[in-house]
Length: 203
Image 1 (tube, rainbow, N blue to C red):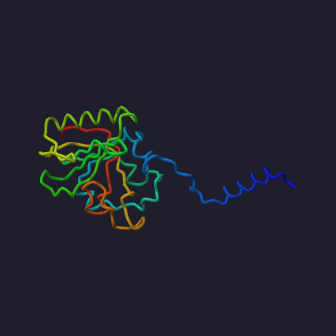
Image 2: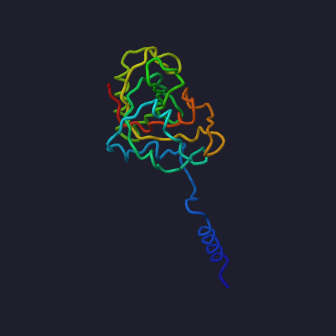
Image 3: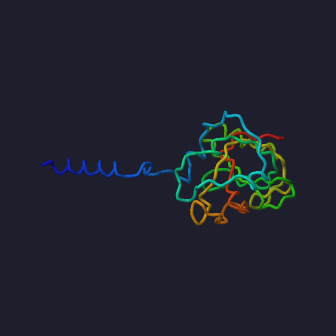
């Protein structure tokens, strides 16, 4: 008859074998944080994209708030360059990212936007360079309360596609959002982001 400690070890091993694949404990400080801060795709060749294209045609993946450690898949493995108008820059997000909202035109409705985010420089010098480049593009434009630019500025933003499913409501297939994605809540497709941003430049 096995000792009690040996029996316990065998029991735990059995539970581990019985658990479904991928059912590992998920410990990250924020939703899909590894994907949000990773630089693996930084040297990939970018494809052009447009805000209107993303909002109209990019199909949402089956991701929601219950997928905090989901790896990148499908479109999220691609790098894109958006040339659009910077409408808002929030530099004080709780997770340390810079939250930037882009629209297709300078006079597009403010909620018809796509979010791009630049992580903190502690994760890579690339993010320090991207932040400095964004500051240079914005220049001396006045920024109102909440980070809204008094005069929008055009910029080219390059980074990896990312679906921020934590703002989806009603399950992985739902078309509802929680309204907490900055001003970019026009549809579930507006949960597509460029995150992380690797490069910023004047067009």
